Image (cartoon, rainbow, N blue to C red; front, side, top):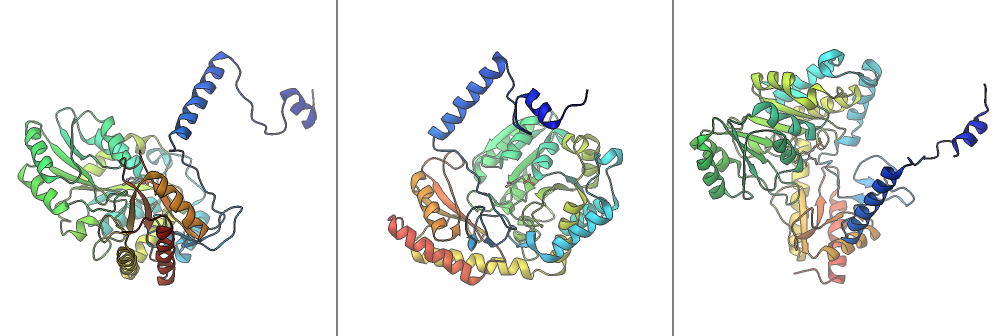
Length: 422
Ligand code: PLP
């Protein structure tokens, strides 16, 4: 029997598209438990709210419901490529030529020529034998350890590694060792303990995103050589801009031939769309295509996303001018802030954590900064250790010197107001 839309809505008991709560005791119990957990998060002061942006990602933003003219200092858009006209054009062209998506995983019918081209380009960029694409670097990290390591092997991981490395390691059956953050004595002790295993893999972030500090890769590679271990680095906060040609931490520290495996993202400096990859020895990449679960059981990267990353890599391989300009701006910000009386953690990295200590102070100051048109975010426990709250500032090549100076001026004003200067 035909019924009008209104009649159908009346029968369903809600307006068009109205949410329908599941009924039953189990659903009610779940809802109660979730609400109490959410209340705990709010009570602990660790609730993360999301600001809605009504413009493209870039140095200057318009927030939904608010005015424009906000200077953005909290994106991983290190090179400003997420709104670069050539990157956008490449995405549109790929979308038109190759469609919206593959509706398939890679090994069924989800591999297009652009996926193979991008993998070849990534390997060439890093001077490695081959590369494999994932939907994200989180997936690349989730997929590598389980495919590579068995209970006969060992993995040694920096205690402050990114959550995705920690989760990837959890999924594998290798023997797990956690060494103190960038502590080479502790790593050496753990490597000695791990000598009994067949293979040892040291896993570290190249650059750590909370502190803006860079892993001592030279020393790590020396220890790896001494104890016959392999080195894996996550280069999400390094690819495209660290090192003389933006190849990353291994280039910066002169150990490109000593690091075996690199995982990185296409979602930060390389156009900022999405996607991740592993690059390294060809047999490893071949094995990942056969065994890595996030690769085997998840959809291919959409053509537009592939187009963005591919163009970003072209731009970086043509010239290192963008990376150099970002380095100069980072230097400007770090030195002016230090002169103003702030403590900035890390060294030479565009992640510039303004160390404040107190969680409330970090959050109130971040709010005051936004009132002055500067978008920065405060981080506190559990994201960073207790008593080490900070405001993380991220510099981009597309910030002007004037943007940087406005940020420093606002910090100085807000810091004085709250007694946060040295
Ligand atoms: N590894 C590190 C060090 C990261 O900072 C991130 C993202 O925040 C990831 C991995 C995950 O990258 P993606 O966003 O591509 O999943």
